[in-house]
Image (cartoon, rainbow, N blue to C red):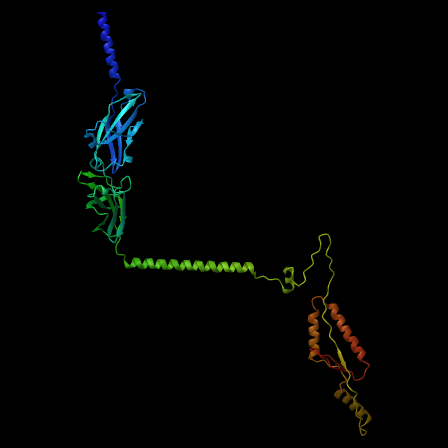
Length: 415
């Protein structure tokens, strides 16, 4: 009886090991799609493997090959022994109208699970995305909408796969609090749509959805795009714009002219200052090659000694002319001596040039000499008059001598 007991115990242990060797396959295998982007994902219970590392392998094959009678069916591997719980199928560039079978299994330290199969048809199962781009443009009081088709993974239009693709255009008037007042729907398969019967100078918002009726596909709506419509501009607004632009141009021109004249004035004042040196001092800053003499600069060790310098005007040149002797007429004999003598003296004193007379020229001469000798030239003036007196004394003993001074100061003297 003991032998039978041991046999039963051994059989039970072998059965337990065989059950423990089996791995649960991945669960909840799904495909996440958008246009032609496909990703296979699954779930895995980590508690069944405790702390062991789990790797997954993903393969695919066209469904029509499964019906083939060939025994050696070749599956194409996409992701091999990866720890991720997803596998990207976009790079396979699957035929959009084809049907494929996908499978995935787990591997834990060499123990393999069963394959989990998933059938996939892009045309039927792949979701359609919203328009890739939406632009708005005002057309007077209307609004033009430019729609860009959903794009595939190779940046081509989804209309290549769904020619019957169209759009639901939802638009509404935006209020001050950004809440829609009343939404309206417009359906079109064109890429450029004009929204009619809109109010002028009003904000409208647009949201668009892609649709495909054969498999009842529809995308999510795009985010709202808002634009203000236009209208006829009133004449007073046009006049206001014109006046503002005219005043702006005038102000700009004034500023430019003011800046130009200020620049020219500053440049002229810098290069040609208004304060100039006197002509007899300008040689101090002339170029070294100039013929005008320069002021000597004394050495630092020597002292510059200057004496008093007096500038005297050039003395006048006196010209003495001796007239020819004159024959005096004899007095009449019939006159009395006293009376004749008196008449003779009167005639000689009245008709002859026995006195010294000064004319306007002599006064102008003395005035000019006085003006020239002012400012510290008293010594020169005194010497000039002494010289004149000395020459007059030399002429005194000579009878009937006439003194003439030419130029502006002319003096006629007779002795």
